[in-house]
Each structure stands twice: as C-alpha cells, then as structure tokens.
Length: 277
Image 1: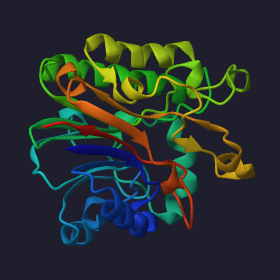
Image 2: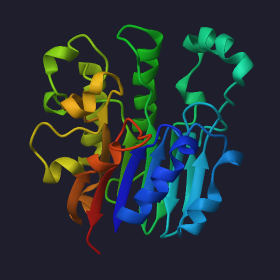
Image 3: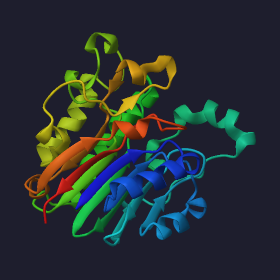
Image 4: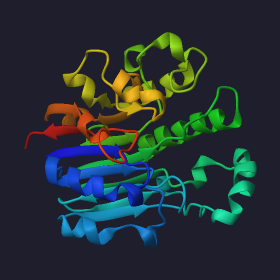
C-alpha cells in the first residue's frame, strides 16, 4: 500500500501534473493540500477516470484539503468535527479580506480532512503558515496545532493504524533546513512550533520519512524565487506521521523531487511511504 501527501498549490492549476503523477507513482491514497477550490468545483471526474474516489474539503480561493483513494473512503471527518468552514471571498472582496485576516481564525478554514482508506485512518492537514513570530498569525498557528493534538487525544487511538500527512509548515529539526543560521528568528523552526510537532510524536506518532532517511539535506519545499530548487535551498515541511502499527509496515519512504521539475510545478514535492501488507 502506498500513501502519499502533496501540497499541490492549486489543484485547478496543477491537475495535469497530478494526473501524470498518479499514473507514474500509483499511490493507493493521495493526501492533498492547498487545493484552493470549493467542494462543488473539485475535479471528481478526472480522479474517477484514473481509478480514484475524491473526497474534498474546501472553502474556495484559499486553503483546501483532499483525499484521493482507490482503496475506499469511509468514516469521514472534516475540520475536526467542529462544523462548516467559511467561504473564501470573491475577487472583488480580496482587499477587504486581507485587511481583516488577522481577526480570522484558522479553525474556520479548510485545513483538515480524514477518512478510513484501506483499513488505515488517514488525515490530510494543511497547517497555518504563521507568517512571523509574535503575530496573531503565529499564535493562531500554535492554537491550530493544539486543536489537532486535542482531536487526536479525544477521537483517535495510537494503537490503531493512523497516518497524518500534509504540509505541517514546520521543519522539526535543524537538519530539515538548508542552513539553520538563515532561519534564526523565523517561523517554521521556532521552539514552540517544534514543540507542537513533538507533542504529536509524544502522543504516539513517528516521522515515517526519518525511519528510512536520517541524513540531512532532504527537502520537500523550495521557494519559487531565485532558483532555490536548483541551488538546493529548501525545507522539509511536508510529513507523513504514522502510528507504531503503520511504522512496523513501512518498507520505504521517499520525496519525489522529479515532481518539482518541469512545467508549472508546485513549490512542494510529493512525499510517499510504502507499507507491506
């Protein structure tokens, strides 16, 4: 069984790339983030033609998470079960929305969807960026991770097969960034953010990629600007965290850098794990 995660940075813009990747890598489950679509606009038909069911949780122009599965979809949870999310504004309301964004809560955004696929509880997450330390956005990011941890404690069992995958917007260790000195005082590497991810490990999750790749210099995101991808100036912020029962089945883990190349790539590369039966 192959489970993958990919921040596609607009499913509409990247649909052709996603279809190609599904054909090449054949994941059984693909968790997606930053789809930037409303549910009614989600491209269910192309996924169906490729052999996948599509489960989508979106708000429109921003955010959005999804699960594509060819091994079934059951027991769906969105937004931690806290109710519907807001709808993103139209183009004529963008300026007003940006001005008011600091007062918006990421709890009202489409950032979490979960289902049971092939006997595994999978969770696709898109954590808030945080923008800068000591801002409302940063505090909201930490609060969102607290909500994720509480959902795990209240609704899940670490003895069961669970995979939480997505764009965590956190590099858990210094070896997950190209130069720790370049990130001093920045988000994604701060002690509270790393502690929030460590709390997930304390609950009973394992970084599946690190089971097979303890070495530094492996990244999943590169800024579009200044040729950072070709220079190797990246961060590992896309993760697949798994419970012990899944970790015991994990035979391989990879970051597919090839998917970051070519025409109109996402700024993120897919990450996938292979599980033995």
